[in-house]
Length: 428
Image 1 (cartoon, helix red, strand yellow):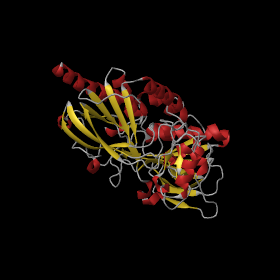
Image 2 (cartoon, one colour):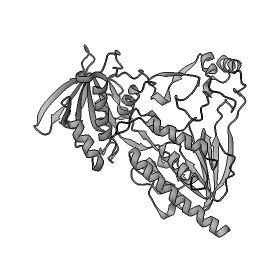
Image 3 (cartoon, helix red, strand yellow):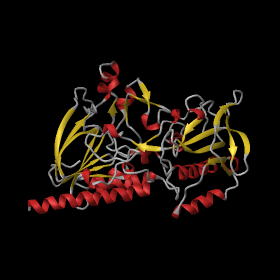
């Protein structure tokens, strides 16, 4: 973290996912002073939770490592984690941003040794793994977390666990007296890159996400494949831990539906095509995927990937909007019920596991923005003159895949640079 002082020629980036990291680095490497804030203890966002990218099926960890190296090397970039933007006043080129910083209870002395986690007994649902496993009350958010410092869950404060963590640390890194604080920064432009969140699958009642253990979401399925994930990289049924070799994927789960999200979330088709390859990767010829779809949206460079997956004889496509899911009590299999709209045949198909290709929505509700911005009917920030020098990047602006999010972030950085350049010209 540099000691750069925020001025009217500084750029504030809100959100430390792939879009925020990209925007911050692009601006900082152009010589601008940048403050990157992230509400979580570490940066990386949803990309850090992926097993592979589509369509190349490469691992995000290499790209993440490159970006972390760029961050460490750039003294124009100041990183503030566990920090939220709670207020913004002023005019384009002359904003005062109010930031709220939550205590980490671990200071810069932390070496990442993990002694505090070994000493602590309390466990909580692991947010990084969507609650599919537990983590300690003292924890490193994930194996490539940056900053590479542990954090104490505030729920252990005042308990013996907090004292155990402090006693276990040989470096004086545990500070139980840390307090929440608020700071004001002077900035010229703001890039809003708070990303997306998965739609609440429990709201899609006919699919029984909250009733059937073997109905999960696409983001949960993705975590299963990670060797550091909840199942150690194995595709297992939550109900009994047996290998999930026959998996159904339901497209548009919560998207393109007037009762849920009206928009197309764009990534869902490609996510399921990608995840269908995981079955072959893990089980070979025994792995089978069935994709239930309205239509497959794979355009431009993604069409070839779709064709490659479709050519796999172990991947079946059923053109249908699944009507409901039931459960076979004896086997634990989920049974998908509906009508194949190509032949109008009714089906009740059993599968080991069902994965809902869940829709994406903005992670910040329109009512929760700390400043007035123009948003569309789906809650995404629009490019509008009334937004002043507040520019949306990535999935704050629309439902985008990683590639398009990076492009969007670069564009937002260029717009923010133009604003602070004009300020510099006036002040010069």
